[in-house]
Length: 371
Ligand code: CMC
Image 1 (cartoon, rainbow, N blue to C red):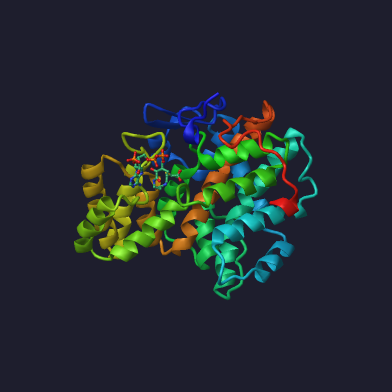
Image 2: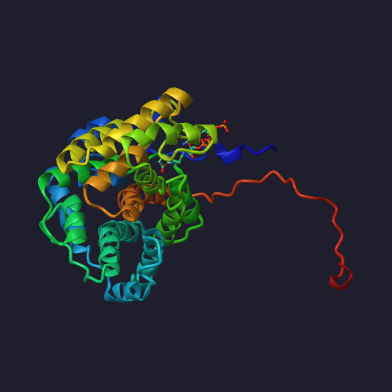
């Protein structure tokens, strides 16, 4: 029995939710490029949960249900007010609030498929409300209730800023949500599946997944990219920064991927969006710095940008606080996590791998006073 570090290359389950084959990402067989160019995030939610695109009436029904369930219990808002708002990361707040949400759902532990699908709907509807409520509370403002007539993407921006967003921002945000929605058996999705394979509840699965996404090697990378860009500050500073990082064998966040070695198919969409949005905001330096980092690092190391690299300058250009980048990833990826959770329940077996033991052997207990 020998271990594979980081489970690299191990096929741990079957799934029809999404695939990465020959560097092409598909959701239920639809290529990500096609979906990024044409689909609304609501259509993608339906696709991931049902295995097909919705008809118009089905899409309208889903939009209505998401609007219906978007409000969060007052108890959760009151609890959020008691968090040390100024000192905590929004991902820690989100993890706690999602866990807490389960306390106020009397069907949290009902395991019938219909009950689990309803919980999926509620979680998907409520997660943007939680993220935006936290953001406003820490600014000393009141949370804003979602509007029933806005799209998922528009509602997020509206609840965050308190004003109706412009069309360009909504389109960009919708596309970012579509691009992040699912990604085969990434670390957080695997975490969610492991959790619910014990027949634990949906809220536990999403809470566990948020914990996994939070780390800088996974979802936390987008915030780390913006931190790096802010530190570099000018296009002229890029070259010395990157060369120093290479010499010191430091990681550049937003580059590399366990599965894609020839480039992440989502990155080009975000690169294009970054170019467009930074032109609009008049802050082209974020895009130009990113491109220069990309050129130098790719040429020197042959390691290409992943989804997190250009998403940093995209979200920054949308006027979003840098520490909300990873929670936004969670808002989108919840759709994929939920699809995987429902799939896991539908054909469940406990996930319990083995470890190759490399500790000491034949130890003999020594009484405390003799140690
Ligand atoms: N900067 C510098 N070197 C890197 C990077 C990077 N970003 N990524 C990989 N490498 C090097 C690494 O040092 C190692 O070199 P060596 O063989 O000489 O020790 C080699 O490439 C293989 O790297 P690894 O870390 O063993 O690869 P992995 O498959 O275990 O990790 C990864 C994949 C994404 C964790 C890694 O590429 C990384 O840490 N990237 C930076 C963090 C990041 O951007 N994460 C977001 C991932 S994509 C979106 C998501 O899922 O959230």
